[in-house]
Length: 245
Image 1 (tube, rainbow, N blue to C red):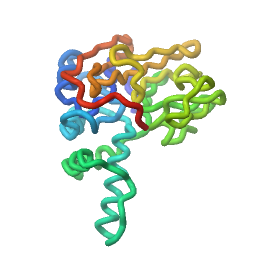
Image 2 (image 1 turned 120 degrees about the vertical axis):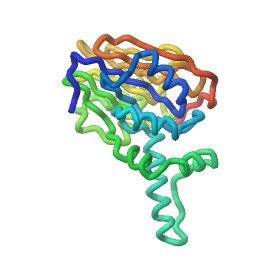
Image 3 (image 1 turned 90 degrees about the vertical axis):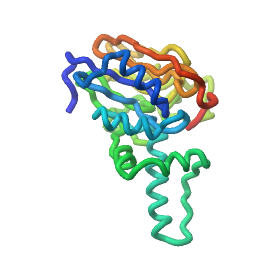
Image 4 (image 1 turned 30 degrees about the vertical axis):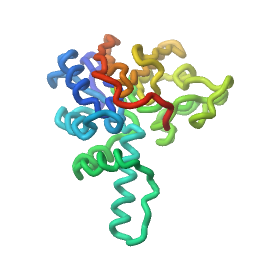
């Protein structure tokens, strides 16, 4: 159930396996179990301890939306199960050797946890958390899962634009979102230091809090209702910054 808006909620950006930075951030915001703790997804891949991050989030009893990287591991697992049942079947989900090794370290309980993550969460009557974003002109309930997982830019009609198709007639989705909900999201690294903040309509705010910790940036938390930003710097860059779906 959505939490009471008067209580403190800590929303944490894309962790991507950066367990040391996550523990440092939790210590900094004094997350001791008395608050609502929410993650914007993409717990896995890129960083040094993705399995440890999944297990830490599980231990904390935190809420979390599904990220596109989390969803890929869930799909990979489903096809692997079919491959084991059906000789000759080929898993169509591409994983490089490093990601495959990581995947094999995830327990059945870890994968079940990831598979059960929703694509969005309502924190209260006003605030929503999603990994990617939303198309404009549609209610949240009308949004497609693929959009909520992978959204970055929209066209003039407010529809999602595929990665690599951005141009002068496209815009970051959060600059066009008319609400009525305010949104906290991850997925798109707009900056390695500061979160992106849009106020696209009266009473509507959008906070993009993926500040690229795994790329050597920062791990960001947004504290609600105060809107305080708390961050820790990455120990180092664990992956090369690049556009990715």
